[in-house]
Length: 103
Image (cartoon, rainbow, N blue to C red; front, side, top):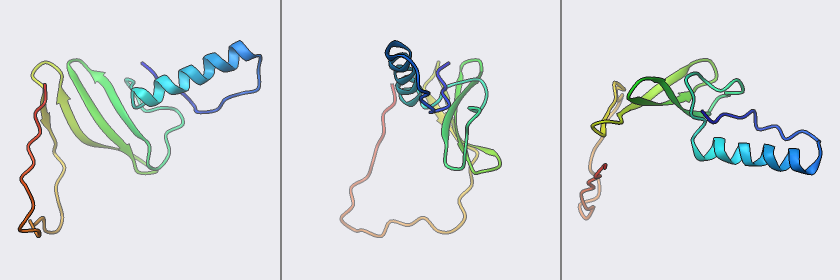
């Protein structure tokens, strides 16, 4: 678990250096943890590791943590229950198809 409050307090050099390294680890792991970071605010992205074998990407909307997608870490299958309101259309006739390979 790597979460941080993103507040670097005044302290001795070794303590500040350790705190900065902890912030960088939290950024690098997208605030990975079994629950939302205590300082989650509107726009905070974080990864919920609270379900065994599954990582859930969540976005805080200022009130709730909205699940954007899940990754099964055994099969590398990505799923989402999000729905799209509106129209998704290919508008560029010269656009190339996009394929994403996981794993």
